[in-house]
Length: 363
Picture 1 (tube, one colour):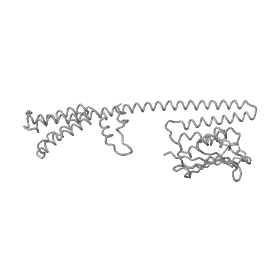
Picture 2 (cartoon, one colour; picture 1 turned 90 degrees about the horizontal axis):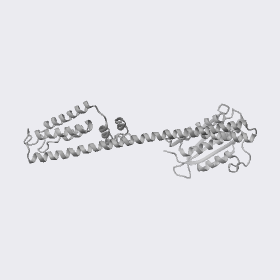
Picture 3 (cartoon, helix red, strand yellow; picture 1 turned 45 degrees about the vertical axis):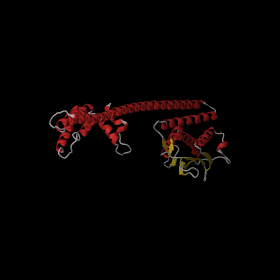
Picture 4 (tube, one colour; picture 1 turned 90 degrees about the vertical axis):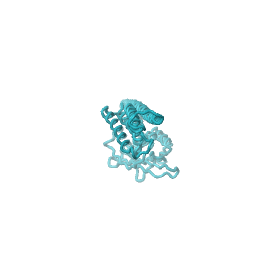
């Protein structure tokens, strides 16, 4: 418990790589030490203070009998604990009274000695009170931080378990749809069930990758690589279809990853379906370009293009007029991103799907 307090106490850490005096002091107060060390250190502090006071006795003007003992009480309280700090304070006061308050070498009581001892008692009491209060406050902070850490850890476990169950349930639904599709004889029905199964399977994989309480942003370049692998695996085309990627590093807010992933997965599935006609020697090409946005200061214009080498799209084709459920969903997600999805015929043949949107990078 004490070790956790020492490690997790809010005031015990170096902040931003710079020394934190208060944090270091708090760590010294909370650091556990053996009884032998504490007693030996207390004796050493008192003996050192007494010796230094004797050495400089002739150089010091009258009225400084306690000068070297105040630091000894403070340091002892920090390194040896409050009880030994009080003991050193008492012994130091008696020594000052006996050796350095006139008449010296006696415990003679007079007005001057009474005032001096009252002053000493006031100062060391204030000193010890603040040290004790600091220790109590730091221990409370450490306990609260430990409790918060445990609650956060429990929350993370519960969150991960929930997301794991959701992903498993989605995977189960996808498997049921796949089984149902295998029993349907109608070609349109089989295709619709297969497409629904692929979408749900993709969502399940995205759920596993992205839903973590610690993820605040994603790198689009790495995200697209993982997404391509998941989509090809879900479609059973990991070996038959080649995909080339040309991406850049760009940190996107975590809450935009799901719509981005569903859009790209939808157009990629279409590219896999239609690009298969071109043969394995003509891979699907995915490119990503990032440039400063001309419309919003601090934002960037992100363009993700997916090209296949299939037959392309019919003349006059427009995404907003398409009756495809998948493209309708992708278009709505593109609007959610504040962008636009277009599908045109690429120069040289094939379809070119382009998603363009503006985004502010996450620092």
